[in-house]
Image (cartoon, rainbow, N blue to C red):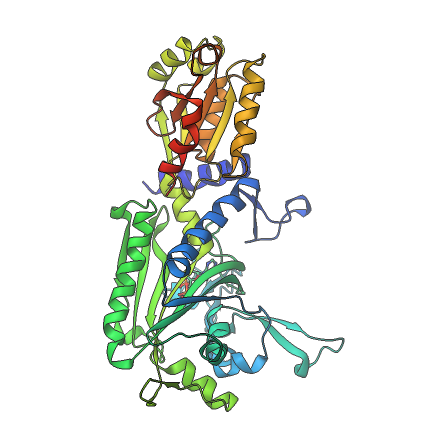
Length: 455
Ligand code: ATP
């Protein structure tokens, strides 16, 4: 079982590289451990994850506004938030094999790799440091933000002063965060540089418990709605005794990755900790004044997720291998497909991504490399290309082209053939990625057909 799951991760990493989804970072220089680059299809996939989140969290809601704050902030922000003193992991080293472990992961007093002795745990700050200006000293120290949330808290007053938000309301942000992780790994699950989508939802204190539960349910629903198998994603409440001092309650959305149940997103009731800290440290009044002139220190509910982790979960969940052949090949044969086509390819790898997440929505494939088939196929491509990410592909047999699109999760392939161009009105076939069913539709219907499938 474990071996199978190990293989699954390897297959997914290989697919990601082969098909231009995710590459190892700085690869031609031997790489840089735990950094990854998103390729031409990967960037589309990840952008779609962010766009769907932004649409749900900001566009469709009148109570949430967006923000894009800087990665570099005044170091006082990180003192006030507690990150300078407390954003640490305990780290232990094996005195024999020299391997390094996160203290939390070690359950015995000996090295899990070689049985050697372990050093005492030392606290290690996860923030990356840099320096502003030409002089590298303590005064010039700055940090690459380890989370986007603090950018929201320090702009709380700006948003109150410049918009018409009223409690309860939220500020949402998507952006890069950096952590000098001790034990990164598992592909893009834990990396040094990653993106977060975070919402700080400010509420009247007495309503915080209810909003906390509502947000946890809502965030779980989001992942399932976007295609994660509901048996592989769940909410897991943190034990009260394990909570950080500022958190009143935390629930994680966990996904059953091939390497075990792990956090996708954390939903926390942070009380008024952050606003109080920043008010005290900055001297600014960060209270909210209600319509009756009463001052309130709002509580905040924070759903904080990782874009890369979510993308990885969607990829893993969508990955399937299927035995195919007969149905599709018969159909292809009817369509004058040449005999070197799909009929020898009887296993297909397919990413069954939700169409909203799929990097390419439609591939336009001329069945043969002949006119007028190619010309008409190009026209269809030209007509669709500004509306969605679509691709025109004429290289190789149609069977291989279908496989290529299956592997990047393209929900629809449109094939242009002589038969369709000779009919009146002209038709094409549209192939559904998951059922592989092909239907003949009129060329004028294409756009409507696709928009109805892409919510
Ligand atoms: P973990 O326990 O896995 O280290 P965390 O509890 O420290 O995560 P948070 O500080 O709550 O994580 O960050 C919110 C989200 O940001 C996480 O749920 C995760 O999706 C994402 N995230 C955090 N650290 C990383 C990382 N090193 N690489 C990729 N994503 C990350």
